[in-house]
Length: 216
Image 1 (tube, rainbow, N blue to C red):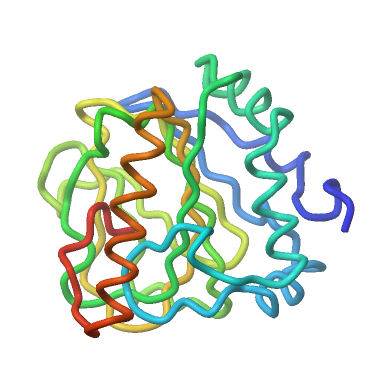
Image 2 (spheres, rainbow, N blue to C red):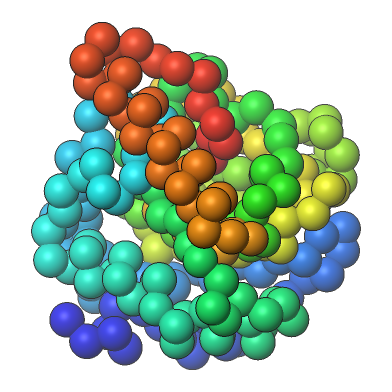
């Protein structure tokens, strides 16, 4: 599948960047309706709640092509230009979520090793009352200035900062997303892979649910 058919670059370019209280932008329909059925068909079998590294999952060709494209130098250049931060030659991490549990959604900011966080949601028919990811003015979940519904094809990106608070109300059920991060170093990549791989193994071996690192 061609890169241009996977995503709507015109919608990406048109999305306004909001600078306060922290830099972010939202792109509804980043993944066009025309390809959503293929992406959903090829979404990996995520066994439990929590984030799983791509290396621990099997996916179909359309989903794999989307993930490969998101980690490409061309995408790094586009995000760099839009956010005003140089992401070229920065390493990336990629994790997948399939389900959310009662423990998920706590208010947090991302770890300092992350420069930019990108969330791409893949949930068809999402109901507004189920709640979305709230972008917050403080560490209070009710003190929000925007709420991004995790609807199919919607992308959210933000620069990680000490005041980039976000979280969502608890939701139990399918809540699919791709999380892409540009990080400070290869060491940060190795730490992320080790942490998520260990968590995935524990869940598969024992059915246990370790405390999530950063639930979206």
